[in-house]
Image (cartoon, rainbow, N blue to C red; front, side, top):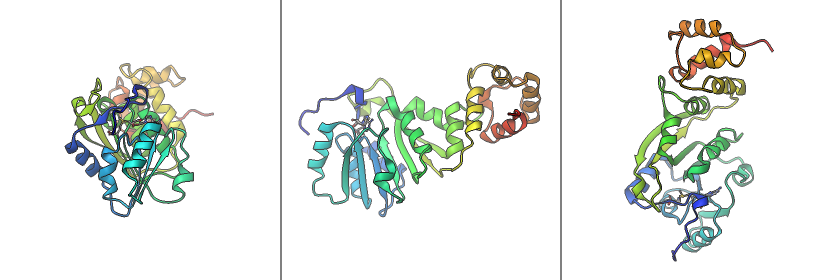
Length: 259
Ligand code: SAM
């Protein structure tokens, strides 16, 4: 590609190590019959690999310069299409219709959580999401009790999440300030209880404080929370991060306020 004018506002740090590209594509568990959506293909380094392996690839790229470039280099591939769009605005159903699809991408770090939320809350869920995120954020999605986070519980409610690997920041160009991390998300669930999501969010409102304190700030009786925690096998002073997703569900059912 001719000299590309890297656009910082689009999180343009391109993966420049072929080993990591191969590891990433392997983590996505692609099949020759798959329809794959790639978010943020950039100059096509990952795209090029995937195109050889799957039935169809639809790329969503916001940067017009890159869209033009991708259309040139993949001109001969009948199984490739690039849509110039902001992925957060992109209408999934209109493009995908009722087909099964898998999603991959080295995401722009600044909007990675919004992108994941979009797919979690989409009615027509993908078979899997395989993303490169800021490593610290990838670890937050995959954390486990007693070091769970709001994001790990939110993700566990919607799916199964696996942390695959860290990618050193020096394997991207331009070199970003932080390392990348690969996560693989699958087995999406429907009909998520949004009240439970809100409840967990309240529990994590001040993660270092006691859970009973956090919930008592939002109308729950401190002593009820404490005794429910003890029933779950925790100390009454437990923090939000100590609970598994199953325990959140039980705590929620136990403390449900009359409305
Ligand atoms: N896949 C390439 C690679 O690994 O080398 C590039 C990854 S780079 C981290 C993120 C890519 O997402 C860039 O190509 C950027 O232009 C694109 N991008 C940024 N914001 C976007 C948005 N809202 N919608 C679609 N693409 C976006």
